[in-house]
Every structure is written in structure tokens, then in C-alpha cells.
Length: 565
Image (cartoon, rainbow, N blue to C red; front, side):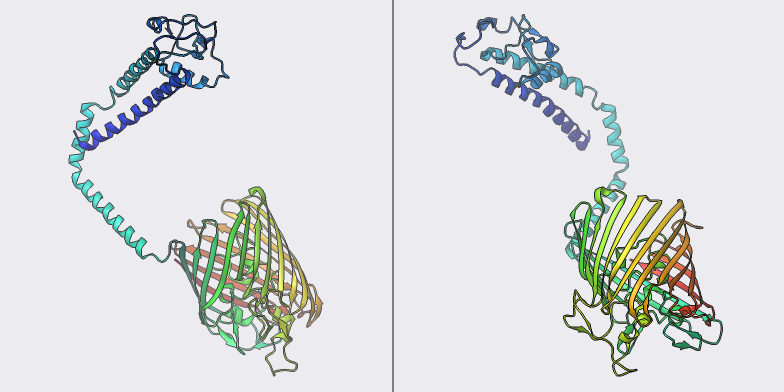
């Protein structure tokens, strides 16, 4: 017989014996506590009630009768402290006897002979249970079959043992040389080929600058690495390093100008979001530094010197992530809701009371939070802010008065507070109501917004956003721009994991700027080659770019490839 099989049988018998012996131990403890042993051979009657008979030693066992239910003992009540123990010993093990008058006599003393007799009865019962339980445990024929199988598959078992040993060695090596026990590394590379053209002789943007030639095709990229650290399992310390294509102008990084749509229409949401968020000029920058934790189960708090409000608010399942769904800024967020962008710092809270359908989110961010003095260059604002406040972007010594001086720091002249109330009773429907307010270059603004998504089936949904704002003291006076977008999304189109979408919107509706309203169209199809590689062709059409009726239609095409690791 195999030693391993014998070992298993012994273990089983040991567990079974221990479980039964525990019952015997309980009996012994009960008997000893209930009937303290006496050294004398006769029993005194002075300490016992007169109603209980006091048998002599030689009569101590012969006068008792076996009971099968604890209720047969008339002097035992449910409220007695030993009732549960007696019930188990009587009904489970059947080794408790009572007196002929159907009493147990729990308050009387007992002799050692009585204790020995009761213990012997329970031990005999235990032996019977063990014999019954192990009689047919394993047959000799079964053991022979197991031994034969072990011999037949000896080579396979040896191979498996070798693989396990190798895996253990590799695991030990990884543990000894791992980067960190608390930090995980994630990376992403986006490479896009872009090209496009426009009708007519020229394109005039929202600031009055003209483009008189079609741009050349370009290849843009963005690469980032996230170091995600958790100390308790429910917290996260995020550090993101990013770089990407782009260039600088007058010492200021200009993201978004390296792609066709961003070159021809850079201010009203036509730029590829991943090419401008944040601006970069092929340097390695730290774009996210924040720490999130949960003081309670339903509340998350985020604080950090480098975070973006739109990372935590205005989510939409069909239009949010420019590396996954729509690419341009007009469709990934409510365009006029977030005038303060990266680089900025502050705090965010996310409260979902009771884990129910309602969620409340709030954020405060300020541009240039690490600067205790004044801003020397405008940073941390959306592209359309340059149209509204061009004086703050004027290079020193060029074109009249110098740029206005704006204070930096956490409570600077460019800050934003945002609140969002979400109602999501199911995965099929979500409604988000939003408010944002603050100052840009010491000029006040207020924005309200709405964000809705509705999944009609598992693979088809509709979505939309709306915004209404008030920006004071702009170059056009006090203006009240509007924004809207809407579209449809399709999941698993042609293949599992694919995503397609079509959307239309007007990013900046303001009669004070231009003589028309810009309208954007975008369509994409995200095809997953694998879990780590996705290729997405995108087509974008822009009518009346820069709110200028004289501008011809701009048509661009982008082939986006995303590598995730």
C-alpha cells in the first residue's frame, strides 16, 4: 500500500477520533463540574435536598436507566446552564443515564464509581462510532487501483514536480528582485498618423490668425508611465511621467498643434485630446501626482499637486477617454465646464452614500499651485481661454501692453470649484448635473452642465452633454457661451471588444465671437487586435471653424494605435 494513501487514512481517522473524543472530554468536564469527586466511600445527606434519594455505593449504577431524549429527565430545564451539554451527550452520544424516577439529580454529589461507570459507557459508545465510520472507508481494491495509477503516471508526476520546483525558484527570484512590493508599473504609448485639408483659400481661426496652406501629414505620439502604489489596498499614490510630440512658441509649450485639426482649428475643441493634455514639447514631464484614500467605505478623498478635475468628473461610458473612444476635446468632456486644466493641483472628494444610486463629487483645483509669487506665463487653462483673454497671452514687449500679472499658489487668480450630482439607478442609465465656478486671470466665471447616457441594449447606447456658462470681462465683454454634443455608441461591433461611435456637437456657441457657429462631427471604430494593442481609424469634419462663416469645411483623418502594458 502506498505510504501517501496510508497517511491520508490515518489523518482521516485522527480527525474523526479527535472530533468524538472532544465530546467525551465535554462529558468528563460536565461530570466533574456537576458531581465533584469525594474521597470518602459514603455519602453525606446533609448537603442534599430531602427529595433526592441517596443510594449506597453498590447501588450507584444499578438503579440508573438509559435515556434517549433530554426531555425524559424531569428535573432538567431549558434554562439550566448545562442544558445544551446534557442534550448533546444524551441525544448525540446516548451515554447519559437517569434515575428510575426520571430525574438526573444534577445537584447531588457522586462517587468515583459512578463517574467511572458513566465514563466507561461513553468510551464504549465512542468505540462503536469509530468502528462504524471506518469500516468501509477505503477498500483494499481501491488502494491497489490508486497504487497502480501512481506507477503508471510516475513520469508525468515527476515532470509536474519538476515544473512546480522551477516555478517556486522563479517566484523566489522575482520576490528577491522585484521593483517594489507595493508599486505596480503601467504604461501606454499612443502613436497616430494624421492628415487632412480644407475647402477654400484660407482658414481664419477664432483669434483672427489665418492659415493659407493645407498642413502636411504628421505622426504624433504620447507615451506615459504610471507608478501606482498602494499601502493599504484601498488607497492609491499615483505618479505619471509623460512625454509627447509638440513644440514651444515664445517659451510656452503648445500642445495640439502637431496634428491637422489642431493646427487648423486650435481653440474650439477640434484638437486631439491626447496631444494637448497636458501640453508637451518632447520633454519628460510629471503630469499626475496625487494620493487617494477612503476614510470611510463610501467616501474617497484625493489630494495632490498635479491632478486634473476632468479625471474625476463628467464621466461618460461612450465619450470620455481619448485613447479609447472619441479623440477630440469637443467630445471627451463638456468643453466649457473646465477652463482650469493641467498643470493644476488641489483636492477631490467622491461620496456614494450607502453604495446607492446617488453620488456626489466635488473638486477644487488651482493653476500653478507650486508658485508662491506671480505667474510669468499663463498655464493650466483651456485653449478657448486664449480667445477670451488674449492680453494674458501676449509675449512681453510685443503688441502693446504687457500681459496682466496673475498670482500663483493654491488660492491663485486662476482657480475652479466644481460639484457634480450623479443619479445612476442601473448600468443602463446615468444622469449627471454639474456646476463649476471660479476665476480665470482674476476674472469670474460660472458654468452649469448636464451629462446623460442611456444604454438601449447591451451593445447600443445614446449619450449627450450640455453646458451653459458666463465669463466676465473678456475681450468681447461679458459673454454667455453654450455647448452641446450628442451621439450613439456601439459595442462589440463585428468583433468582441470593439467599440464604435458617431457624434455631433457645437463646442462654443457665442454670438459675440465670429458670425457663425462651429459644428464638429466625429466617427471612430476601435478594433482590438489584442488586450494590449488597439487600432482606431477616425474621421472628423468641421464646419464654420472658429465660428467663421467664410471658412471652408475641414476634413481630417487619424489612424490611432494604442499600446498598453
